Length: 314
Image (cartoon, one colour):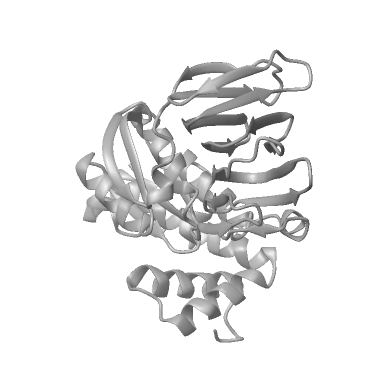
């Protein structure tokens, strides 16, 4: 970037480059470096992105007469427009937060962790097979009388090697899912922990709640401020172990939240009225951007990619 350019001019130039075509590897590294230098760079880029988005959404965008500049208009009206609509504001907040990265302290305190969009399978010392989904971290302790896996964040699937003398516990917040030999999934989110059993029996307990036994085909959810588990029929929650997201009549907002886990950029649904739209689909998780494009096409929605900021669906 030209050192004589203002910060906003640099941001506008980067936006023009990133929006016009796919960035080369060198350009991508250069943009990431520029954004990472300080918050002022991210703020300038966010303002440009939000302004461009707001201009595209305005009725004047498709009216050449209305879109023509007037003498009374200020030279940078988009600085005000970027704060005048909900969707642009979401874009600003997404970029000001910087690139989505895993919490370093959790990675440092874990025995195994995965990056965004990079699930991993690991055979444990006891013969169990652990699968970690995107952006997940665990601590593993295999002792002589007990096996513990602490889920620090994200989601795991575990095929437990049978050992009646050493039950395996998956700890997630205040939830303890115990099994001797079975296969189950544990998902730790902001709202609580979900345990889904695909084979065998799993005992789910909390410090003060009544323990429940889950059999194959059942799942339980424990909220972050709850002590008792809510049991329900199992929703297929292990498609990610096969690299797909399979949903049936799932609200669009929830489908987007699932795909959001696999992308460094945020997914923004600009039209809240479409949030409850039921979706039935099988989407590839190894290429979440392609999954988003397919979802937008089949749902008759548009999809806009703003590099380093967000995917906007409306």
